[in-house]
Image 1 (tube, rainbow, N blue to C red):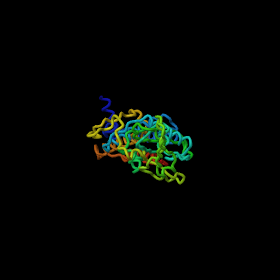
Image 2 (cartoon, rainbow, N blue to C red):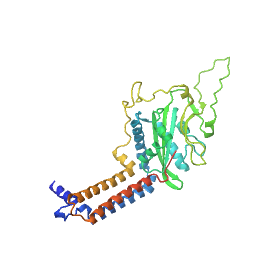
Image 3 (cartoon, rainbow, N blue to C red):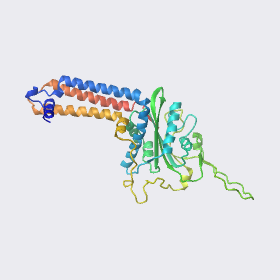
Image 4 (cartoon, rainbow, N blue to C red):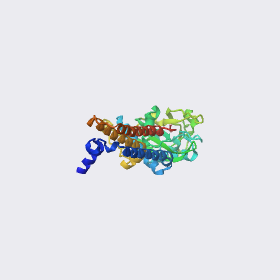
Length: 361
């Protein structure tokens, strides 16, 4: 303990034994810290540009972290968290894989398949459904921030119509660069009923749903058979236009035709019942642990490291200047300020890298 106190005194407190020159502000220490900061920043930039977009492990970790961050945003707005649905995760994965394999980024595929096509593929009949997309992000917190800063995507995240969520990622090429595609699917399952065959083309979305004609009366008894799928066009609740001229329609949220006539019922065992507030409703279990959370937010970790350096050297400068104000060494003050400036520039660079060429839909 005595050695620790002596070390702290020599490194931070100006006194006669260290010639009133705290070790932390000396040229050798300043040079070493600046070198560490620059090496760390170079590693972060390289990983954000080349390693993370091609890492399957990061994609899995990011999906888990995004579920947690989405639910945190809902809880912060007095809403119950969403339960993870295996079917929605599968639908999100299929959509992410399709975008990655074909190199497009849109709610509607080049073949005209709308978001709910993937819901049908996994057998998820819904009353309400929504989709958020992101590409070119290297930090899960940046994805959540971008979505929450967009009115349409924020409305999806905070919608009371949804009870379930599924998020998936896929690595691919977009605009000639390796990237991670992120797909966030929302849904509320429809009550068990006759299967529904959704019309999955974008052009059909603007056409009114055509009721199925009643069968002609017959004299003979009609045998009981399994109900045939009823073709229907989901009603667009919210839609965001894309800046890409090749994308005609980008759907953000839809509801099934049956949901208009049938009030939404709680479909999850953890959904709040009548008289139960969101705050008292049980929160969904976290999808990621502490280690996964750290790896899913590399920019946050890097910025926290630079903030720590800034705080340490700011403290050292204050102690150096005010403990013995009559004895000052301009080089020591300049060295401390240099570390603070270098760390601050790294944070600014990280902020710009985090949103460079990023896109959400």
